[in-house]
Length: 87
Image (cartoon, rainbow, N blue to C red; front, side, top):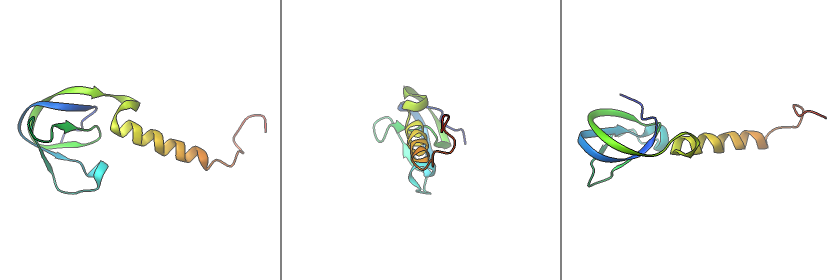
């Protein structure tokens, strides 16, 4: 399936099913429709159907971007200081 590159709201869909396991760990595909559960998140995959969405966030402001930023911040806390200039 196609990888969603941005967060958005589904405005038109045709039997759309999304694999959100990269974010939630849930292996079941999630059915999305404009009137029921229209939120689409970056980093998820379209498994069936088609649709159109209005993009609401990209890059570091998207859901996957926030997660990657937090993971990067956690890695900085574990730095022992040997790589810093001036030490």
